[in-house]
Length: 117
Image 1 (cartoon, rainbow, N blue to C red):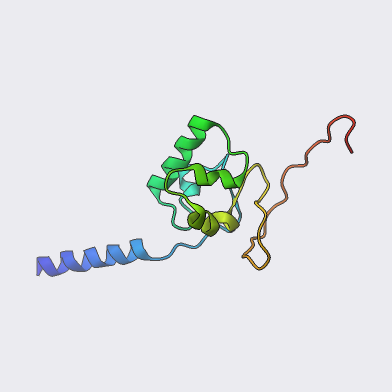
Image 2 (image 1 turned 180 degrees about the horizontal axis):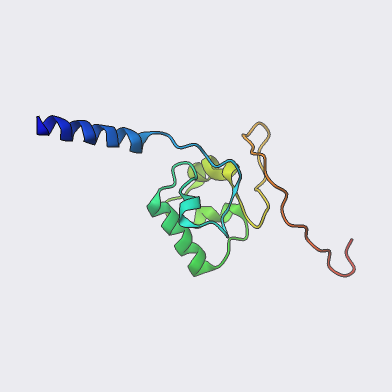
C-alpha cells in the first residue's frame, strides 16, 4: 500500500514537472532579468539561467540578443525558440516575417547625440 502511494506521488510530481509552462507575457530583458525571470523562458531551467547570469557577470551586459548564443548550451535552434521572448536594453531582436511576436512595452527613448537628429 505504501509503495503504491509513493509511486502515485512520484508520477504526479513527474507530470507537474513535465507540464509545459506558459511563456512570459512580456519580453525578458537579458541584462536585467533575475534567475527566476530567465526560468520563465521556454526550455530554460535553473542550470541554463545560471549559465546566462554567469556569462553576464563575466562578460558584462549583452549588447545584442543574438549574443545569447555565446552562452554554453544555447545554439541557433535554442535562440530561435527564445527570440520572441527576449530583448536587450528595451529593444527586442528583429524577427523574420511570419515569426511569432509579443506585445512589448516601448523601450527607453534614446537621446540624440550632438550634431545628430
